[in-house]
Image (cartoon, rainbow, N blue to C red; front, top):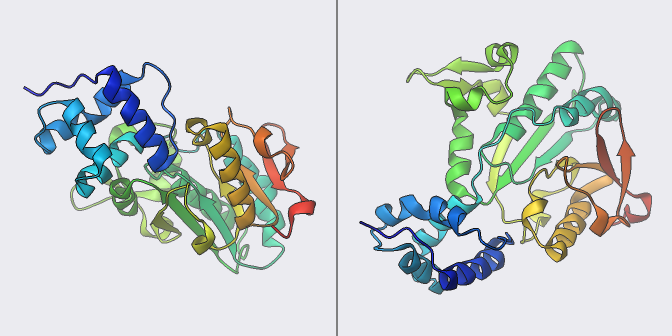
Length: 282
């Protein structure tokens, strides 16, 4: 039977490795988290202990194992329409303004995890268009990125179990935007899936290939990074935002490290951040 325990020395080595690979900072005494996330990989890759697996992945001997470990450590199930207010503000304030510009709207869902956020954005846009026929004629493109290639493949299929569907999705939206597939599982309807393209991206790398965006959702991910990395990510996002583009962060996150780049716009309820005019050329 494999030993799932992570020794203090292996945990320290793994913490440093994970921060270098994808910027995620594990706090002290989080061995239990590493143990639980890597447990299934011990059996899949036939290792006798968690310490042995960590040693191999840190040394870079097995690229498949490396990807599996990163997938395991960065994958998080999330909610539909999490916190509600970003999606309400999108429909009530941002889409009417952007629709008037009569140009293609581009929205980025960074660190999209299991896909609920970009699909929630797509549903919000479709609801807006159905209430206002002719709005956003130039089209809407939603780009969703994540580090986990395994999770992205699942996101593209748009298939969710009953437990996932129960987390923040109303019966009305379930009926409007989901259908039963041939296997009897619930799947996001094609018109919603067509609005979203999923791409693999490490937030520590360049974003230039993604192009410019009107709105960026980067929610509940910056909490995992160090202050220095957080500032760099916020600066890079600003570089991809259109003039006066909008950034949504998680409810517990702030742009304190990059307040010279963004202005806070308080709403009732909620808030968002707008790229400052002095940085329009960024």
